[in-house]
Length: 141
Image (cartoon, rainbow, N blue to C red; front, top):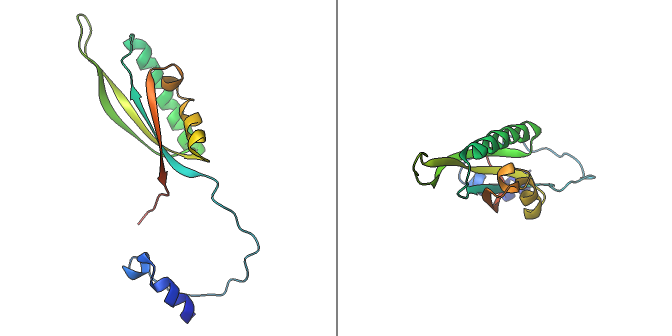
């Protein structure tokens, strides 16, 4: 027990008093271990200037429903939307403002995250570019 407390006591959570050791128990020898199969990746979609506003609105509604479905399936851990101006006002047409999707997905690797992004119609149809970056693991303090 002393050795466990000594080793854990130097870890950041314990050292900064964010966690407290309340009990140390012998749980036996490890006989089965699994590696985390997925990592957290950020998928960010940025809109290109489209020709048809109505078509883009349809794409957005379908894609947002897909994001909600992914959430219920556990594919994503969080999602953010930020409005982006993608077209200036033209005669008989107002300025076009569309959301930037920023979605945290669980994926095996960067290619898997990109494959998930390619399921979105905005990417599939070439209306948005996609950027993928690894986020790491989510902590709740």
